[in-house]
Length: 556
Ligand code: PEP
Ligand code: MG
Image (cartoon, rainbow, N blue to C red):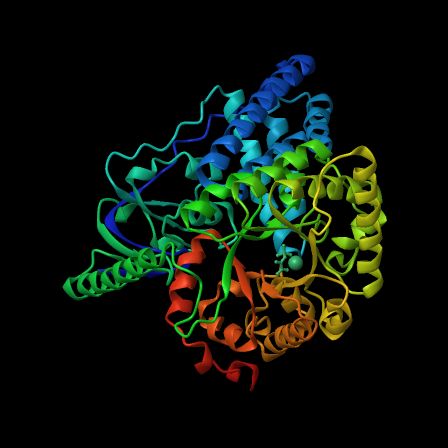
């Protein structure tokens, strides 16, 4: 029996034979000096352009497949690769190498890959470091096209736990899900693409298992826990019994979740706490419906901007917002205005480089500085308000004047629609994200200006604790359960209720079942969470008695 410990990146239990995938040797790439002399730069550039064009076509097709099978977040992985491929610096670097070194297209791709990946890997930003892997993926795709090697899906002959050194996003996406019990990788992290895809596809996954995970394990039976990150290969009778007991507990939980499908989000003593869903595109509605989501608490509209080639037009946005509003059929749909900057950059909307982008020009600041972009979005939002229960949410508010400036723009957009005879709902609710310490401290003033609050605990934690949310190494210093964060949520909730407006939590903390009782005690009116968390949370809420919930987690 061999016990392995890695990082659990996608929850779930699985048992089955390990299938260790060894990638066939990459296409042979000739870099011999003699080949260089023989190359004709014009012909090599043509070969490169053809291979890159084919790569672009493949990436768009993969994005479409991902959008249908795994949702918008997964599709964005491939869109990001397409953006990289379209990057003029990357292409220029390859063409310049062909000219200056008279090398093959293959060698030029390798040079550009190594140069760009090294630049990214050398940054001290973990997000940018992870992008180095994207560069390698894109280069691999071009090289395969140059060699005429078509991307073939990994063939699984029976249900297996698939193990590999690493899997590319496309390899993961193209796996036959009916034969995939779980995923194990030697490297990787919770934020890499395989992990994101595994989570959206609901496949248990453990990464970072190191060299202990090797071809020698091929064919052996294993049991794995994608939450705890444990893998036991060739388990003995006791390990098997423990696994079966855990699986039984999971089955019971699953049955409980099914039992609450269609039930209201109320505690045992009748306190209502609605559970809404976070989405990034209309395509995510499938997951909302499958999980019985009772509305959309956060539509991160920036994903529409990330997916588009330029800023989406008013018409494109209107169609997306209307689709969501109409599909939710009168249920609440909260759409957040563009929140870019910091970790969310748009290649077609360059923002000035800043030392501390999280403290820089982002979210509402961008909208107020670029009113033409903001107005286009607001027109689309108000037009969509005629087709459902739409509410507008403003991100990163820190001052009352910002809200008032936004309200003036909303008024002027509505006047414009009136003049054009375009229908919209004048009473469309307008709310703000409470995600800066300033917003918490002036919550009473802000609450008098708007119709609702929504707490962004991801940014609020980052700004309160002075912990970069992108940094992977802050460990115990970055504690979202910190009493300061929970007390800030309570301050905002008290101010909201004093002003008679509701308060939702839409950051990651909303889905943390260990805090549900605390949020009930604080008086939170609704939670907005990834669709897969709706039923577990509902089960937790329905099993809780609100009057017994306490604020003890706010104390040391
Ligand atoms: C948050 O900050 O908690 C939030 C919901 O917004 P985002 O994660 O998109 O910044
Ligand atoms: Mg935020």
